[in-house]
Length: 315
Image (cartoon, rainbow, N blue to C red; front, side):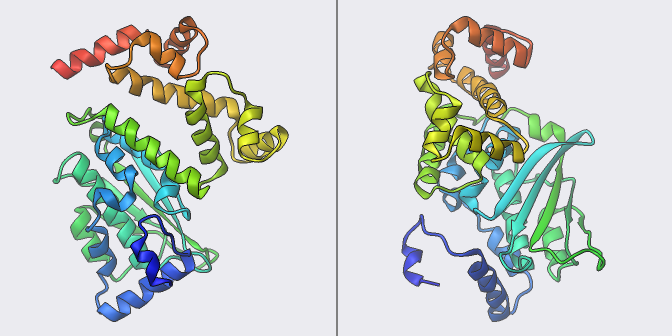
């Protein structure tokens, strides 16, 4: 590993080399809990501008959605998802190890860092409902449970094929996830998300879905763009883009709709944007088209939504 790269905050090392570094580090330190200790050192700058966008999120749900979208900024061998689960929510991490399963210290660090992020966002006393790790029990289990303050379940069978990734599921309660946070700042989110997009575009990182989403977000304020334009930006034909998105379980129209839906509430929460301006920022040619779309998404008008959140803020 080139040590000079440590001076470059944007540099990246190969996944296989990083996993070997974890193994050697644990052996050198002589502490099975090394990964947990490393994860506890997370700070906003660890994840570049994404860390500051995280801390400015209006809710934990808002932050986790953003983390999933830009997970390739954290690690281009990390796959994340976030959704509902038995009355609450589940955060899923899939950690790729390169040529072999990730070292347990790497998994520990990822879990501890995520918990540290959540606590900085919502409360230092917060604990997940439970955590499930698809792997053999780790020698650091007690330390991880002590930091997480919840049960850690290891799910593994010797009959399962050897995989080169480790899957983690963290169950979190709905009330904490959905609660509005008093320090949410849409303007800071907007500024730092722009930096995240610039960073990812410079490195050309992320899955195709992430790359298409990034291009759509960049083009939305311009108003006039198409699926063919996005394909051209990614150096592929429109038909190839359609096929690859279909293989990923989505489509251009679905991504466009979902991004507009998500961005609409962020813009409405930022009072510097007039409602008439937001429609154009989302790429709608007419204000009426935006209003109809918003009512379809949230069963209320943009004006009613803004008045509602203004009332909640005063309360």
